Length: 107
Image 1: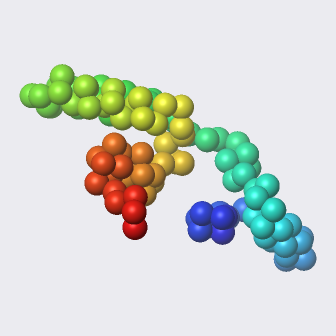
Image 2: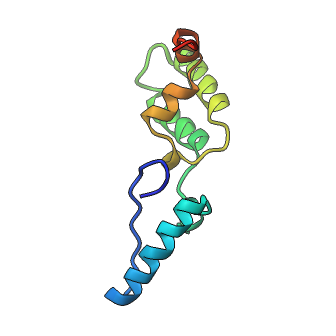
């Protein structure tokens, strides 16, 4: 697990080597030098690419397509160049302007 509590799996090899890599990762997490996004070679699409693809596929189906396109542009502004796999529900709530307006800073 990384500092955020997300489980990351790696294929390493024999058990002895796997134990050494496991200890190394735990140390990196404690030192805050573990960046799992650097481990994966294929990062997948960015959030903006996924939104564009989804809107393109749904254009013939939706009647209010222009409204959804406007909403998609707002989301693309918010998650500018992040990869799709790095965004989860908690991230989207933290980034939402509504959640900041509804939050209570005194508590």
